[in-house]
Length: 246
Image (cartoon, rainbow, N blue to C red; front, side, top):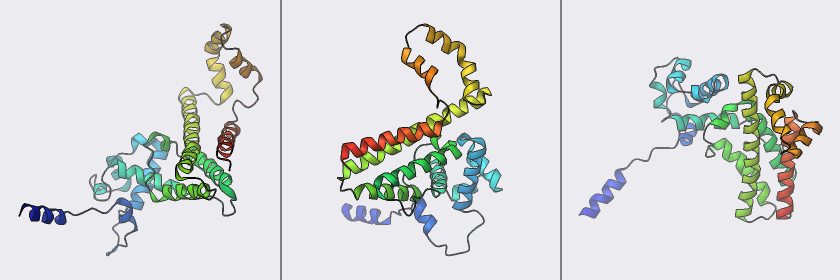
């Protein structure tokens, strides 16, 4: 008898459809003025203009011109909201149709991802969410390119993650530097170096950092962030090619 009650209880449970299932499900009635697409677009605009911390349900409601609780009928909270935002901007990522081979595919996505993060710096300050349709599409394209080389599943995923970790880490460091310069009102590398010169001069005078001093005196690309990013990216790709013989 107890087992039958347990079975009946289990059967009565209602599994709520996922955020993405709800987005793809055709509407049985005309859509209300407030939709997941409108919410995502408004949240991205707020984050681009004011930063991720400004994206609150109250701020979102004000921008959309709805009651503060209205958005909760569409999204459960911040996790859903972040997922919608990341998915929306990630739709811009696509490998060229004529991309040949794993390296060109991964390199293309890496360069695009950097540009996307620089355009939307809030992406680096929220939890990295990969379980969205757009991000899964991007991952699938790269994994398929690696799988076509005959890699085992573990090597394929490790190589994919190595490239993406480099892209996210390098670009986030660039964003942090840019924001640091903006907070201090320093327009570019030269002003930044002049402002930090007293500290750097003292450190160099100790004689403990001769290699760094050599860099400071001889480097010609200190402010060429695109060159530095692409050089590092190619080092990662070269390492994968050598390690996996692909």
